[in-house]
Length: 595
Picture 1 (cartoon, rainbow, N blue to C red):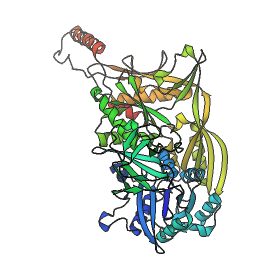
Picture 2: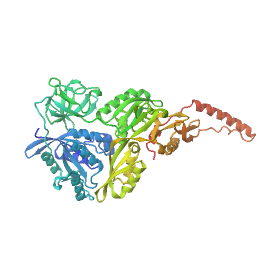
Picture 3: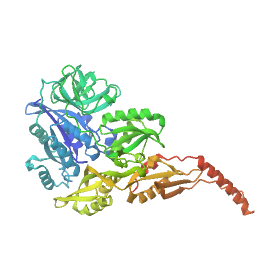
């Protein structure tokens, strides 16, 4: 136990976590030259393409230091706010954290929120100044920011570079000297916390755990505390670049267990593994249940694929515990699932993964947040979906979720950032100058307003400098209306949205004109209307594709042409009554891109 160190790497997006993890693996000889590549722990194609970490990755390194052989268990975490649940689970499995700050950008919003997460769990923090090889690095300024934030001394901060490998030795010795070794009782009953799981199509579900007390041997009969299921540990081992089997794992070890579990409901992230014969008294405190921020419906393009989609979602949930879903049905789209995501990037990634890993074609409805509706009978309903809103005569009031947002930006962009927030019905709560040219703004904003394009706009007006982090602060009454889109007088429930009264007219008009561009022309006129209740607020028409029936009439009386046109008009009218309008998937997605 004395030679084990468990630590994770936390930072804002693009501050160089994965690159520094590469250098640590290289320096400790965990990687052979043949296995070396950039961001070696990001093993998903999506992660490589986008250059972001989506999943936490655990790996064990061995390092000889002062004649002693140390086992270092490293967890590389994502930096984006949408994947903060991954970070919180990684932190729960560690005793220390490397806090990485980019020397060219300084402290940003996610740095602070991840740091607070680590401090809540009493982790030992090692601050590291990364990207010191860059010409525009500002080590003195950024060091001051770190000292202000952590209250540490400047000699505690390690200067390093993930690209060149500078400072890696110092980091390793700091890990050994400053991070405490795991504590626990080797003779006590087994207690191991599951912090992640993956699905293997040949061997079933593989659970990753960290042992708090006791030990586990290959072939032991174990049970999962919360689900009460019992299994034999067919294989246990440690996580290197590949899984390496071991016969026994003891206190402080991080490893994996394969026990031939086939159904995903039997493994819950945050559960405790213990022995059947000599069980522990109580489960380890797991993780807080995740609260989705954004809800959207996911439906199979082909209705026959519903069961396949369910199986795909369950397997994906094993790998991404922050995904929440429940079955629902829609008039336009048939059977599907109502899914909760931590943000729009999370939603986009899930959609991509369903397509790539499970080959599922899906339609995603307009995302929205969850509202509280108070009825005249005194009931409180959670409304995730515009169709779930009670009729206006039964509705007393609606409350919407508000967030408290921390935005850190350069002082020259403050005016533009405030204008953006106030345009989104935000209110300024606090403004603090961290240094002479960096400001932290605390704003109160409705969550529904930042769901769509707030983050993109914030990045573009601040030239990529502003960073953003938020948490839910409560619910407040709101003047919300349900905006329906009608095609040929038929409502399309997948395009309905709950929207603030002041924005409804503008949004309805833009929606209609966008749909007019996207819906292909048919043999009959298509009326696209935006309606609030029975009141139509905007209309566009997709003109019919028409044959020139008067082509054969040249010369002669006008009544001959009129007769042919009237005959065509009747045919078009009849066609319109029986014809139905196909809405392409691009139309559902275009609503998200409305600017």
